[in-house]
Image (cartoon, rainbow, N blue to C red; front, top):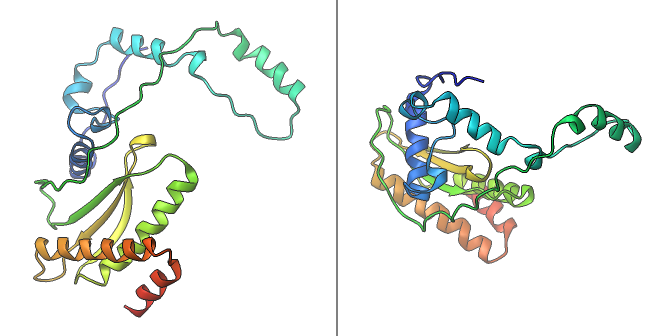
Amino acid sequence: RQPVGLGQQAQPFRRQVASSLHTALYGKDHPYARSVGGREASVAALTKRATCDFIDQHYAPGNATVLVTGPVNSAQVQAALEQTLARVPARPGASARTAPPPQAERVTTIETELSVPAVVLAWQLPTRPDENAKVRAVASLVAGSISTRVHGRAWVQSTGHGPAEQLLIVVTPGQGETLAQLEAGARLGVQGVSELLQAGSLDAIKQALVAA
């Protein structure tokens, strides 16, 4: 096993924005503020010994989950496991660490070399699939609500992986529109949907967006 170099030059601006957003949301000392793929300096500093130690610690049978699907019965699965995974010596893996929650609401400015300025609203996505789907659905409504309040456009995308995944609403300006105007429109869009949600009226949200 030998560490290999990672392609650090692909999509540099997107990585820069994503990294800055994670730092803003979680704080610079939070585990999720670090890039999954590392940075050029951290990857270059990896040693073979450190890489092997990490793999031995975390990629252990005790941390494995086996999912079996298809037209097989339990006896067939058991036989297959005895011929394969059962030969791997039992060994517990390192315990998963529970990361602290993200920081409270805050506003930060990120300097990039992107040609178009933008206001980005970011939230940590829940890991439960049903809750994740609800947040994404509401975010789409919020983006639509914001689009009716600015001259530019708003859309939804996500960044990060697993429990560190973030949902983003990106708002870009129309001609002559300032970032202050974008931010004001974004806040009004969020507020409008939030008030309708608190009133328990999803139909009212849909009607408001159609009317706009």
